[in-house]
Amino acid sequence: MQPTTYEAKSLLIEIKDDYAIVQLNNGKVNAINTQLLLDLREIFHALAKDTSVKGAILSGRPHAFSGGLDVMSLATLNEEEMVHFWESYMLVLQALVKFPKPLVCAITGYAPAGATIFTLCTDYRVMGKGPKHVVGMHEFKMQMQIPEMLCDVYAYHLGEVKAWKAVQQAKLFNSDEALAEGLVDESVEVEEVMERAETHLKKQIKIFPKVFAESKRILRKGLYKVVVDRDITAIAKETVEFNNDPELKAKVVEFMMSLKSKK
Image 1 (tube, one colour):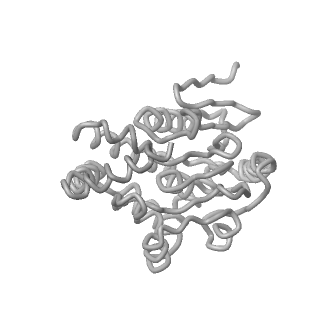
Image 2: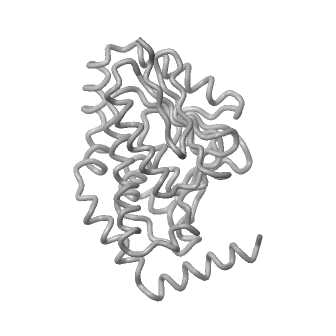
């Protein structure tokens, strides 16, 4: 029986032995847009059902996991499209958290903001060292509000007090700092990230699948609660309504214009 082949516009999927490698492949910085979200959700739902796949790795390319949300693209969306974007983003978080098999994240480069939250919904994170390789929520620099679910995921891992302090400082953590804070599980050279991710995954897929899935569900009740047991449509609409404040929109536009002027 031939293994199932998977294709997606913004992803590269490799079925390797009995596990899958899902690599973000969405432009130079793997910016998070609606197409990427739709592809990720579809792929992880399919991999969850595929009995020949025992686990998965979510990765980027060397030195670039994801630059976070495609802010420039989002600015062109109307209100309905923005609600769809945030619903799609949160549905991806749900698909990652509910994925019943071992899921390792190979953080091959920078992964700030929305990309950080992706990584925090996996089971184990290996991050590459590098001066520009960072995780964390720096939305305050961009005058942007972090949606409630994203705040909850960040606080689940860091604790409310540390998460709030980090958000106020727009703190971005390098791989060693992220390891010290528990945001990642390994800090290694970039060239070693995929090897270490595969090594860990191979150990986990040896565990009886039902035992792994049930233990994962029990031991991550808190994360399940903040991601899965939620009204995502309500959160998406609240996020868009909040961001439609004229004064706030002007601040965000001002920030984006400053980015353009630096190019």
